[in-house]
Image (cartoon, rainbow, N blue to C red):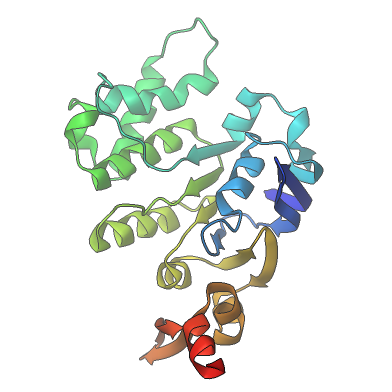
Length: 262
């Protein structure tokens, strides 16, 4: 389980996070939502120990993250960062996924037959085992995201952090990636911009604005017009479609306010 209590972080002259609390339950998918610059990715980096908070605590299974080694953290938590270019990375898909086993090997130990089996199982689980011998740079963005998740699965870590895993993907791949994430059964914290994706795939949401938690709870509690409109500055409507609810967006409330006052 990952938890954060009273996280405060100042970068330069800017308070990036201010008193942020977050909790997760085993197998739960927690979504971090909020406008650009609200602190979502920064919070994720604090949860993984890349950034150290000025105040507050990040706990991994009730142990402060500062007291854990990088290898121990990686054995507990896998990280899917925003998709980076891989042009020039001259390794195969299978070799890339195999790197997830490095956290279980010593610095000068080679990979075992069991490591290779686990890597191939991870590729099969995300549906891209046929790409094992292809170059990482030869596959599409959506396929590459699946491969990155496969590397995390090869780590055999019970928790996963994802920073905008649907960025730059078309609609089909966005849903396939998040449906895959839900199916894994891992404790997951994911940064998302699309509120409809957050509503569909997350069990719990944390809405951030300017480094503070505005609302935390189930999607029906957080994705309410009265909560979202002041944060995003846009008109929001909840539209029922059978048993599903979709978020629809109208005009900027700032423009509406400016016209009214004029």
